[in-house]
Image (cartoon, rainbow, N blue to C red; front, side, top):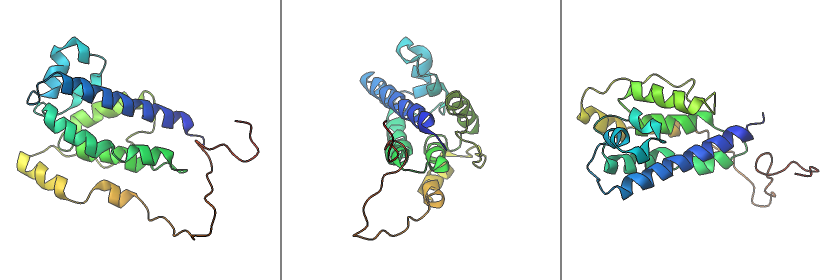
Length: 173
């Protein structure tokens, strides 16, 4: 399967997320709700997905959740086989837990470029309280369930890089 364009789009999206985080941090309002800032300030209009976040999520909380939701992306995007569930489930679990409507809106945004993003994941439930959301985040990460154990590699076996971003043997690209 040739998924290099999907990988490129997801990498660009990761860059957008980091740019939004940088802009929010520079706003100098760590306790302000992100969704409110996204509605009020013109500089955040290009980051429409910020309005999908939980209404009470502050800039400080968003920073922590983004780090947790996207830390796996660079490594996963460079793997020879793309783990689609791991990419989407970390974002669902860490950024939209207890916010199913926001998750759906975010998925629609990402699916404009990557049609499979977020498909096949379990439905999110609406958060009953902040305490239950805190307990849920302490449970096992969805990455643990979706990432398969890698087969052991012999020390004397050469590292073979196949597929994107490494060209196939004999290709001119």
